[in-house]
Length: 389
Image (cartoon, rainbow, N blue to C red):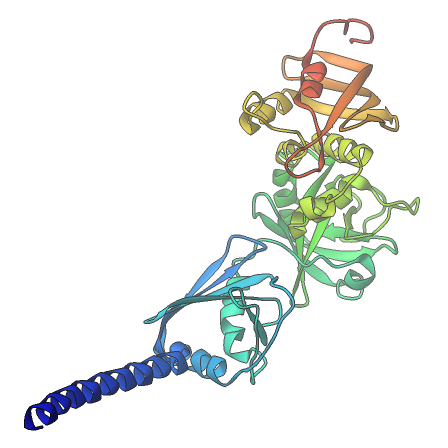
């Protein structure tokens, strides 16, 4: 009996020890889960819409965000999408949220939505800092823009490609803005943007006015009436915004393309576009000498990489398309016939040359694109003597 009691006693001690270890394990596990967001070491705020990132490491700021996450109301979500990504690195690992509204953070692993009590104010400074890295302008309609950029307002115009800026004043315009450079120095800066020559070519710009930075497009040709003295600019020039129109009450495709570019919406505006629209936009981009935009709409491959496509496009020094037909489609291929006058880098000029563009449906994206063979037809000298000048 004594031996049996001793063996039971030894077993009881081990059982107690195992039970104690198990309780401690459960305690620390629950503590770790409860304090998951209390152990955050750093955070990164990233934009999906442009190349921008803000690192958050200040302890006091981290604690404020941690508190909001810990006290947030958590509800089930139906999907994961957003314009921003928030990556949290803690002692227990990492977690990622996406959001559009900083007061509603969606956990990408669980789909749960965290409704912050402060409605996202804890991220406001970080979002402002991230937005300062945004190269794009607000994608506002003309109806919105005209009430911000009012008549006689002064604004700073920033050329999207070069970052060069100058001051203007809006003087008129009911369907778009008619503006004039403020001074001779402003006119000189504008002229340098166009390579020292006034031009009708459209350029993507940002209009900074009344605390806004609006995506827009300008031409670079003085025309019509001007009212600002001694600014070395004989007339005014036009600035177009999203959906604005020319004096004939039509939208100008080239201007709209540049507005899309300034807003970072170029490819987004062409999602699901028909073959004819892809052809027209690609040709309009070439007309405006924006080879980067044009190359995005040409189907690249191992045989025709983007570098080769841009090289071919650069051979076209200027282009004017006078006619374009509706596409003829057959399955995943189509053709568009056009009449164009243009000049090549070697000085060869063509007037009213007939060219057939080939379009293909990209098997990966299922989007229509211009086939590289079409560019070779522009550059081909064969059967081109007719109409050459």
